[in-house]
Amino acid sequence: MRPVSFTSWFCLGADYGMPNFEVLSRASATIFKPPVSSKRWQSPVTRADKRRALIVSSLHVAYPFLFPQYYDQEWLKLVEPKHVKFSLELRNEKAGTPERRITFIPSQTLMHASR
Image: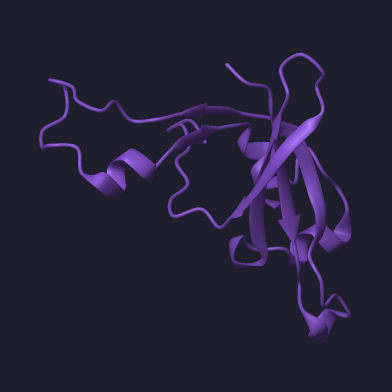
């Protein structure tokens, strides 16, 4: 498994004097790809499914504004999911140096039922 860095970025917009995205938080992440074929899948795996990935990281890192009990910064109360995007940085396993950065807006965020 490759080392992957996960970064949550946010931008409140020009109305708040913030026209560009800035780092909100960082953590490690794990990437899971769907199987090419599996008996557990109800339908055939499509070409689009093969490009999809499940990225697992800490929810309090991805969306720290959902956890006011962890972070007491007043400005964080202004941040909403619509202000956030994420990036993954793939790193060289031996050297630990960055190889590629992928920026994306999540199509879906899943959280454990206890949250």
